[in-house]
Length: 371
Ligand code: G3I
Image (cartoon, rainbow, N blue to C red; front, top):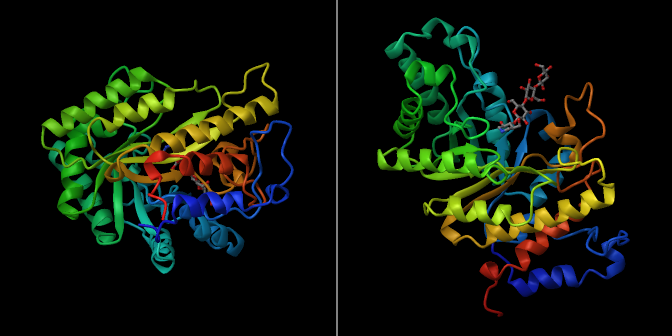
């Protein structure tokens, strides 16, 4: 967990003490103060704040300083997935995952494991086992034992299965794993293998559009119920929260309450708030940014309102806007460039930072009796 949490008064004074001038020029809308030298994000609430990282970015000292100041948990954006670890010949490479793990350890940060089994990854190394049930299962078990076992005692949790629900929520995904081991059985097996590798670590299931697609959320919840009833060692729920400015007010709160109804820890696992994806033909930049700020505050309030035992972590999917996957590949970023994260390309906190901070510090759930 993060360090001692300042009392609410400290946090408020932390902001209130900032002379308005220090909050930079208010934009046309009074709701968009841009903080100057804001308190560290991780100091604003008594739960972990995560960020998606890559080895390449961690080697940038400016990036690392901003990251370690504000966050207390790391998720490998891609280098702890099969696509990096599992070589075509079936061998494993851990150089980059180990560097991320070492960075977390050296900076006293939590390491969250993402992800063991994902429909989007069907590596060549599994081709020889395709259709050969027990042999296929054995290869998957070997992979999970190797990866989870390697970070046993350091990883604070794992996305064991990523995105198991079909795009629109009409059933579960058909994929290499479901075709070989059964549509729910591959999920159960993955959790059992991860539990075999580490008897303690929280094991999560992770999906997206749970806020925006109630049908998908219902399907996801039916899957969670099925897994729990069958004794699967499911220890938490990840809601990726790749949301955009078209998300209606109230959708986040409804989703959070539904997902929290199992009593399991909740991980906001990949938060970004896209301006582009929700850009309607009539939306001005100003309108988009006001909506983005509103959603950031709503997400923070909804998470902060959870019981402490259910606040696993609050993770954003990248540090600065230019680090976001929504910008497309570096080689040909997709204009109009999106601005979905808390810090701008130069590492300056944006209005969404203020809004998220406001959502956290205004939350009665976090309010401590004034000292
Ligand atoms: O950095 C290498 C580069 O050196 C190499 O030349 C190039 C071509 O092979 O690959 C580059 O790595 C890419 C990496 O992103 C960094 O940009 C990988 O190929 C590419 O597969 C990887 O994409 C990641 C994607 O998951 C697939 O793993 C994205 O960064 C990452 O943001 C995205 O994250 C997913 C979550 O895991 C699940 N939820 C949705 C989310 C967004 O799609």
